[in-house]
Length: 368
Image 1 (cartoon, helix red, strand yellow):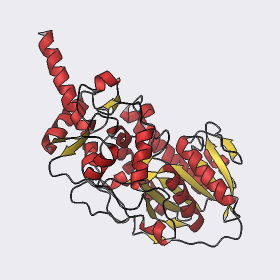
Image 2: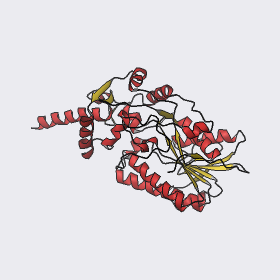
Image 3: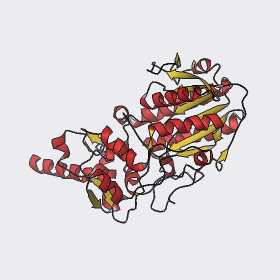
Image 4: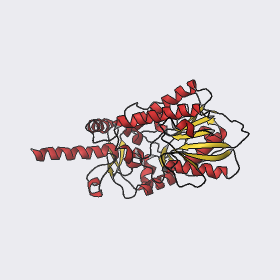
């Protein structure tokens, strides 16, 4: 992607905006934000909800269609701009699907959305991926600029899926010059029914840290994502837009607000055990994803801020929302377990892996 810029396009008529997956928790927030803006008599006119089921928002024009179906182009007739959320927020469902199947589905859907949007003559396609595509590293600037290179590990995990999605979008900008493509990269999403690797980090008994690590925790409430998308569509922002609460939190601040304690490991121990247990299927995501819990990947929201957008939620409030949303859940290695099982081990991701590895060793000794 080229460096961020603002594309402000004048429009003679109110836009019809489509939203894929409009019945999902994230999609529902987006369509409601669009409807609220439309009620103010702005450039947003009508809202079209696309997907395999209808949502609960009143005022949406529902068009039932599979996102990987050739029928999608027909369902986009009359739509001026389309919002597509490529980032998954339903980890429980993802864990029931193989990595290969998940990658193929994400690729097929994104290709179909791009081709259908171009065929239907849409002016703008806005796709939500994640700031995780920048990668997490102790060398990262805090915050990262929007035009920072995408340095995430292109592995078989969900971040790797999003890197593939962004490759498709870069090609689309060249192949379909009449379609303005904008990528929106939010920080760690929080809100009701948001289930991700990051939210499950806080379901563990303790928080993982690594020696020498300096995380810069930053969140994005789903309502702020929704209003940011409204601004992006209304003003034609792009080609890259990052969205997050202002600033970030240190590890000490996270522990003070959450009341959780840390467990500290060396990076080599955390990643080494993670890699081994991922290979045997105990850890459901690549060990490289552990970096997002221990190294910074905060973003600036520069384009949105310049356009006058401001988040309604700060990071402390977002953390509280996250903790409320996971209440009653307990995870080891991102897999939810009973409370009595969670108490056996360790903390989030790699720390839970240490506990799992110890349990496995004990079982092997008993078997002998």
